[in-house]
Image (tube, rainbow, N blue to C red; front, top):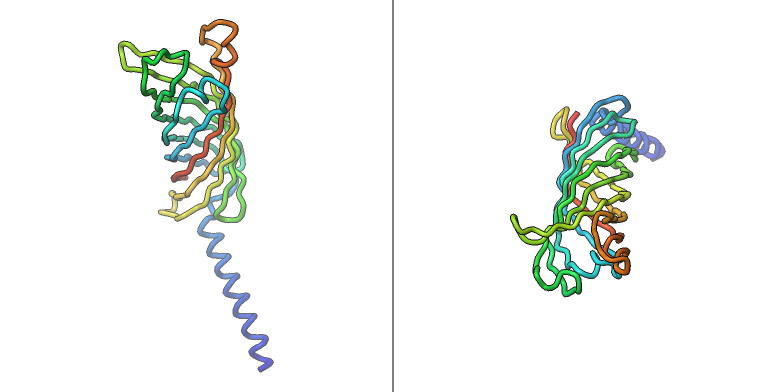
Length: 212
């Protein structure tokens, strides 16, 4: 009986050591000084603060965000994104009831840094800057409002599978908070802050493919 008391823990320890070793080898490319690029597609939920034009005038539907980034493991990286949502225009005093629907389109760039947590988890903080457009109607009679959008994002990734030696598939979930500024929008002084300035948050989830 005493032998089994010693043998069983020994086998458990050896088994865990082998699993850990294999796990480490499976994700061994997650090291410093290795070049990579990522492509991801996310489902996007966007909301604006109430008491601003963007928050009071639009009912936002679920949208998308497409990301492409590149970098070297262990160092900050650079990425580009494009996103979009369809919306319903709510009753408001500024659009005059001319539009029932609008489209949000945004494109920009971001700086990120990957923080590995174990072999499968990654925490990625981001700083993003984009051009946010509210598009009413269709060409040639479109009415467009332009905003600059600066925001921070906290993103978490979990490695689902290593497709091959050079491809890793991950699931991602992220939360963002940022500021909108429409300085180019011309309107009277009384309504300027209401129209030009807003803040909002976004929640996104999707899949990311990493290429080494």
